[in-house]
Length: 141
Image 1 (cartoon, one colour):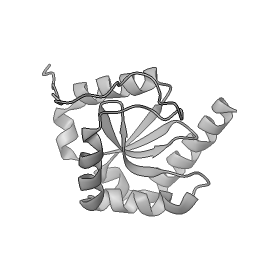
Image 2: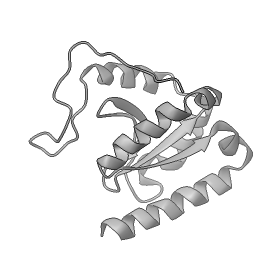
Image 3: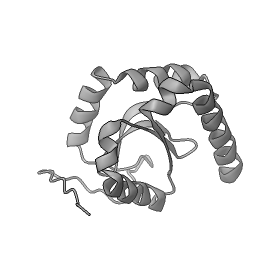
């Protein structure tokens, strides 16, 4: 197993929350998130079309810095992350697993979809997202 180490020079406090109860993250990730928002993949565009403007009843943000990561889509009300995995994720399974565990430690649930799932069966993906939203809503109520 190969471990991936990301080194960020100037680190802000990571653990915990700010005074306004926002999750802390590395400040440098804001720049990366902005770049990612400007350079979406085709499948990210498709999923963003489903999520934007509270189309599924909740506000999602895209390319959201959380802790040491930038997640594809995040709903703070549900503590729910939606990740889109391209082909390169086949080589990052250990990293993705560890990342999911770290987010779970914060109470954040991660659901993942492959590019192929989104392109081949968008209705199934949409249904899975709706089911997960319903479960999270019930769990957090």
